[in-house]
Length: 213
Image 1 (tube, one colour):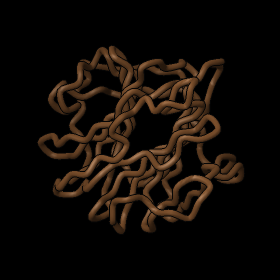
Image 2 (cartoon, rainbow, N blue to C red; image 1 turned 120 degrees about the vertical axis):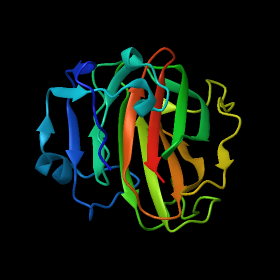
Image 3 (spheres, rainbow, N blue to C red; image 1 turned 180 degrees about the vertical axis):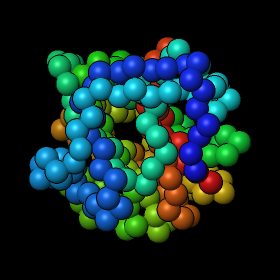
């Protein structure tokens, strides 16, 4: 479902972002394999035409760092240059006019944060275990962030509601399934596979996953 982009708002971002568009790509606890990353097309400079504010679900275009196109593939943005760890403060789920939105908020975000996401047709597993998420679904979007954490230096969780259950048309829930050794994974439960996109936003710092209904 492509968006009708407006040429009046243009985002120029120099990042190293790997986009895998093969629908058969599967993930693991360690993220995409090195082989998959080597074979993927490397986009060193992204010129994205940012849609009008209503097409971004109310986001202010000038706050958007990166807006990936709608797709059903895998997105990889490797960690780059930062020396700190980004700390999550909240994970929320909301519904917009034509899509459902999962928002990951940060209390402290390092500029070098990396992330990858993919669409799965089997339930993911919690890190270092074979336990599935609490939500029951046949399709999932997985968002992994690194270096990141959802707890403070004492081990106290910084995200209070780590399991979100909703009854939207497609998204049925989102939950943190891994918070271990500098990586955080959020599993998004879907009733059916659908195109999704990632939007990287500042003011305040957020990483957004939108899923078509």
